[in-house]
Length: 354
Image (tube, rainbow, N blue to C red; front, side):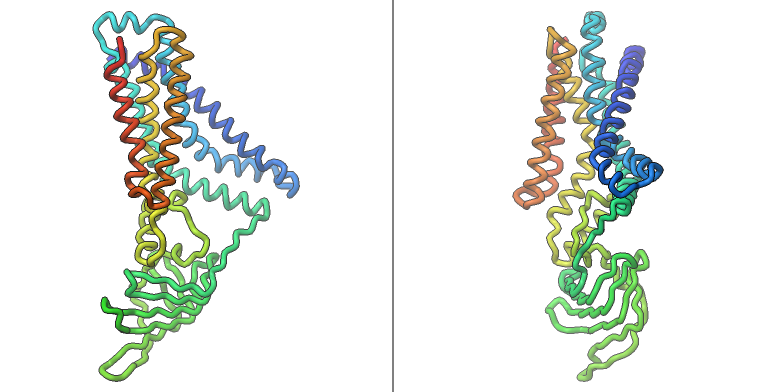
């Protein structure tokens, strides 16, 4: 336990400095990429700083994995260079046991990354994008008129004259309900429907349905039974990664029920969970590489860790692309690089020479 605490104390100062540097670097890159636009539109300094503030959580989410990589490789390399690990190994403590505290830290940062991304990064980044679009007078347009959507495996067919994104409302709504055999059951017509957050509330809705041999019409009671998510009525696609995990799951289900392409959204949904484990994987790779060199230990550890991490990110990018295109199952595309590199890192860590 003394050695565990010692290793953690050596790790955290380097990690905090690295996080600060990478967050500042990412924030400056984002700022300077839009600086000339801010100057053209004479955006006040207070608003520019507010945009930078909203971008900080996103920068932190990007900075954590690479900071762990740098801090772990630097810490172990520095201990090797000072011959401190030689004394530890001579006492019979294997390398994997000495570095287990860093593995636990990597697992902790993975759990933290998921909840931080879901609860902080997603809403603040949306605020940043909305404010940025407003300051730079960027209009997001989409053709949300004359929409036809299938829902509930084809049992409901929505026909909408226009979907108003600003008020989250449907105008000129017709809903055809069918049974499993595709036979007509009822037709609902409404001048307008407003999304309450859980269901569609209709205005002046009437329903046509068969009663024996006659087609009857009557006023429809608003029972809250129509709960298809507003996202399925948008012609402008919304990425599942831009939504909280619960909303992303609902989006995938709504796309599936509406008969729309959902493989890409499902892959992004699985990727939300798999990507949060990146700090753990990078920690494993970094410390497993740190025990394999005898000369130029600090430099070679950093270089090997960086190369292995780049290979990991490239493989993840390729697997996610194949999953979104439907060549491999979404869950395989999201998790295969994580499982492969975790197993490889643990194997290298166990076999590291001491």
